[in-house]
Image 1 (cartoon, rainbow, N blue to C red):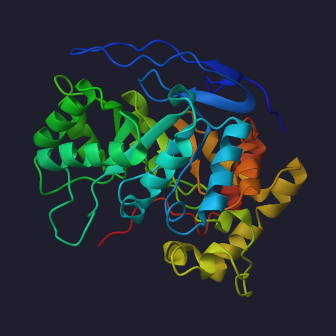
Image 2 (image 1 turned 120 degrees about the vertical axis):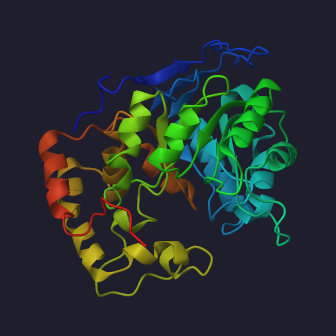
Image 3 (image 1 turned 90 degrees about the horizontal axis):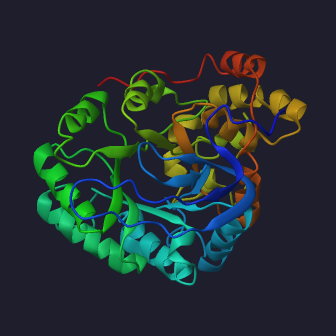
Length: 362
């Protein structure tokens, strides 16, 4: 197992923010210098000037909703302790609760010490009005998010899904105005199809170009490999991958033929539903076939799974969800683990019968 090297283009341990690139319109915010000295490595986010930690702390189904605030604060503190500088959330997580939590917990930190990302699209109430990517919603939701996050800008503003009800030109024009008003530094999207990504690229210029994509990606879920990753790599768009641990299944703690342990995500009413596609004994048996590889490298199953997604040069960061500080520390240790070709081939063979490469057809 090697923990050094720069084959993926990232630094190892020490990073200093650089001046903004500057585009048409008002000048971008320039990050003040802030120094990190950790083993966690950093990668450039697409064509932006953002340098983000390879491990990012997410808040889906956790902070402000499924995890006690004291435990959640401890997780954020541990993230800073181990060198994580990238925090991702969304307005819809707890319908504002996750953003409110992060706004509170980050308030005491220097704003230039972290990269903050949020999203919009999903309904924020039951009226049917506060949702989507219309011009009105883009302006409303960014202001609401900034208020909850207690900041005057986010570093990355992402379209949580594609809005089939709103012309793409309207969305891109509004998002471009948000950037040029200084409320967001860069733009991204989550779970867009290749056709939707190409359509957005065709509108830049004059509109702002996306710098990030946020797809589901893991040893078990490989759908982005076919088209999304190659397309994005060609156009300066990095991946920020969610569920690199397949909702915790790739930690190996769920065993075939055995009920899940009390207190784990799979038995949680708030979080367990997201694990349905990974519950079968067939999947759990395949995951157990990965254990000898982790043991042989002297790393945890979680570290193996995260190192696997980070082997892809187009991945800027792996999003983790943690309920305990120890999980943050364990996951962060995956940064810098380089898996050799023999291990990668063996992983492919172990999960060949359960890994998903094609999206389901309706």
